Length: 382
Ligand code: SF4
Ligand code: SF4
Ligand code: SF4
Image (cartoon, rainbow, N blue to C red; front, side, top):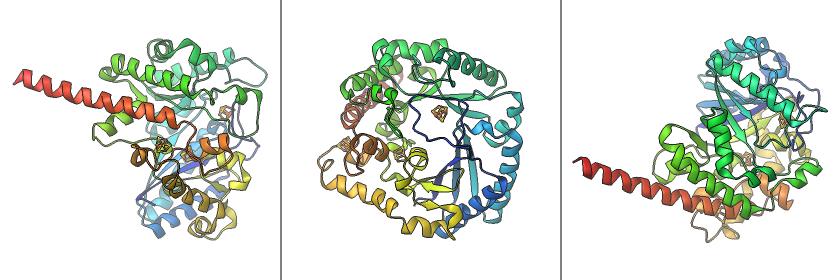
């Protein structure tokens, strides 16, 4: 483990939406403050044991806002007390669909979450829905809540997952919708994967259309470089890749980490521990264990056969599929959950390998051109 730990904490497995591609098996479980206390003490004790200085908790659900703001205020106090007692620093990040947002959230979002929320919207929206309703009502409520949050000074970052309709309208229209029409200046585009129970919508995801998806990503990168990069628009993963290839400090997404099991873990409202949100909610065979049934998190992680598989994955890939790849030191074989949901095994490379290679090449070239332009501009000014 490095000196930082990331924890995806699912405070509830309930949700007020019914997205067709959701990978979570939802239940009515919610974390109580008593159980949160036990959970956080074990996580912090683990950090003491491993000499980890800082923790970021990514609060998610189901829908995290189904627990009230007062619950998070108490959770924040409780976690701060426990962290201070162990000389550890804890940061909080909130991911929400925003459907339950109202002004009562403003205080805790400012104090606990740095006045910032991450949320999700696709364009065109085919799959994000409220129970029994079409995507239009989701868009309408989401848009209203996000406008209200912004009016209260809250920064809203958006995650979008491309679907078939996204590929049809193309990158230019997609970018225009988010940046020019919705005023989003910080968003990221995640590749789809059919996690959890099979549904018709998951079969429709453009997972097998890597070539089309690659074209979309590359066009989107071009649009961003031309229209957004110089105007403060942050678009992931392009911005992080550009920083990486410009030899600047970059926070790359977990999919390209050397081994996500080294830096990240997820715990759900029932106490189950697994690699990340999809694993913990939908793949019980890949649970590392239960935090409420163990005496120590370090022991649970050390003895988990499922976690052993995550640890063995990089070496398998280095010896085989990724051996001769120029980008091995950047990509490390990609994301285990994308691999597993497509290939049914952890020991294959990420199904988006070709997309990543194309994107890495493109951003490497873009970084070179930008560096050249900077040198030329300095020479002109001298
Ligand atoms: S994708 Fe998120 S918002 Fe949609 S149903 Fe699943 S947990 Fe809820
Ligand atoms: S399985 Fe994929 S999404 Fe989950 S933590 Fe690892 S790299 Fe990230
Ligand atoms: S780009 Fe492909 S071959 Fe290269 S490390 Fe990633 S998954 Fe492996």
